[in-house]
Length: 104
Ligand SMILES: [Zn+2]
Image (cartoon, rainbow, N blue to C red; front, side):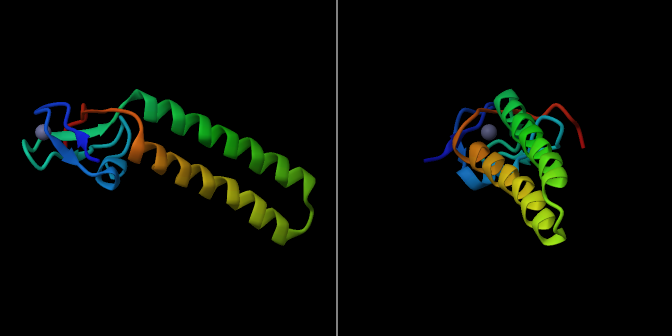
């Protein structure tokens, strides 16, 4: 399954390539067919923002609930890593690519 380029309409992005394109604020990755740089669209931005917000809240909660440094490290870093991985998976399989707005 490949993702379609928003510019030329050809399925030129693999799921991993799409995930590596980054969000709206990044410069994106070029399409292999037409060379136009693409980024993940609004859905990705929203999902990633929500995931990071949840992770941030969890880290704060963990910070106050756990006193053991090891627990703070595990439960404090865990949600951030999980948010990053979930965001990456979302970009791989869901959401649409759009043409990058930012110029290099
Ligand atoms: Zn293209």
